Image (cartoon, rainbow, N blue to C red; front, side, top):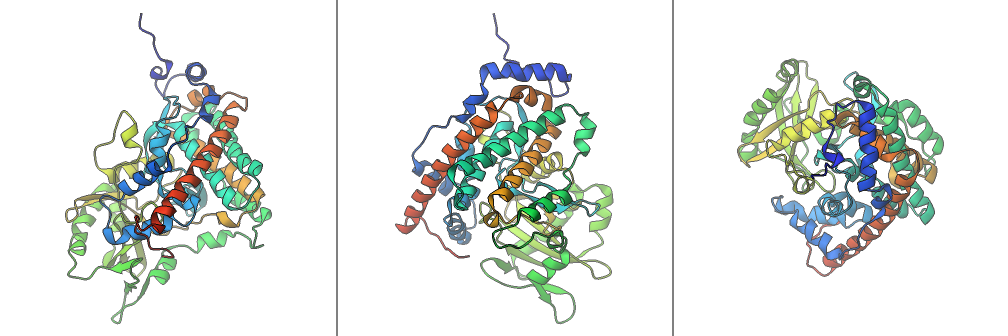
Length: 460
C-alpha cells in the first residue's frame, strides 16, 4: 500500500483546520528539534563555492567583491548566499513551500517608502527569491544574527538569544497570520513609526538617535546630489568615480542598448505606470558597484529628467538564476528579472511603483528595474546595543513571517511550529553552529587572499 506524505497533500487554499493538522503531521516526519542539526564541513568547500559564483561577473570587479567579503565573517556570510543555500539543502526540510527571499540575512531588512509615501519596514532585497521550504529563510536569518552579534562583542548566550528571539517572533506571527483572512494578511504591514521610536529609546553605542527624517531624506534628490553633477548646458550627468561608479560614454555599446532595454522595461509595467515613465527623458547612464554579494554583476544607474526638470534615478540590476534554484524541484527557467519582480511583489507589503524587468541584447542578460533610492534606511547593525539588536530580531522575524504568509498557507506552518519553544531552541542551536562554520569559512577565505590565490582589493 502506498503511504501518502502529508507534505504533498492539501493545497494552500485548504481549510485552516486541515492545514493546521497537516502541519502537525509533518512534525512526525521532521521533528522541530531536528532543525538544530548541521554537519560541520571543510571550509574550503565554501571558498570554492564562492569562487565558482564569480563566473560570468565582470572580471575587473571580482577583486572588489572578494575584498568586501573578506572584511568580516558577517560580510562573508552576506556575500555567500549560494554557499549557504547548498548547505541548507542538506538539512532537514519540512517540504512546506513558500515564496522565499533566498537571502534573508538581517541586513536585507529595512525601511522604505510605500506608494503613498508612508515609511514601512520589510524585506528589501529579492535577487535570490524563489519558491522553496520556508525554514531556509529562517535559518539564514537566525544565523546572521549570531554572526553579527558576535562581531558586536556580545556574550555568547546573548548572541544565541538573538537567534532565539528572531525564531520566536517568526513562530508567533505566523500563528497570528494563520488566524487571519487571506485578504487581511495581504494588506498587513508593519507600523514603522512605533518601531523606530523603540529603537531610538534603545540607543546606539554612539548615543545618536535613529531618525525617520534620515530615511525621508534618501530620495531622488539625495541620489542626484550624491552621484551626479550639473551639466554646463543644463541638466545633470553622473560623476565618474571608478571602480565604484563608471560613466558609460556615448560610444559605449552598453549605453547603445539602453533605448531597447527601456522599451522592454516599459512593456513590463502596468498601463498607468507606462504613462508616467514615458514622461521622462534619458540624461545619463553609469555602471555602479552595489552591496557585497552583488558586486561584479552588471548594475547600471540611469538618470532621467521629467518634463518640469524633476530627476528620476533608476537602478537596472542584472538578475541571474537564484542560488536556491539548483536545490528545489520546480526550477524557474524563464526571465530572471521577472522572477525577481514577481517574488518581490508577492513578499512585500508595498512594492516600488517603478518595479519592472528588461533584457540587454548586448550582454544577453536579464535585468530588473527599480528606484535607486526610495526613502530607504537600514539600522546601523554595528552600532546597536543588545537591546536594539533584540528589537531588530523581533521585527525581522515579524516581517519574514508576514512575507511567507502572503504566498504560503500560514496555518500549515503554524500547525508545524505549535505553541512550545522547540522550534526556537533548535534554530538557536543551528544558528550558533552555522556561525561557527561561517567564521571558519571566512578564515580560510582570508588565508586564500593572503596567499595570493584569491585576488582581492580591500577598502573599496
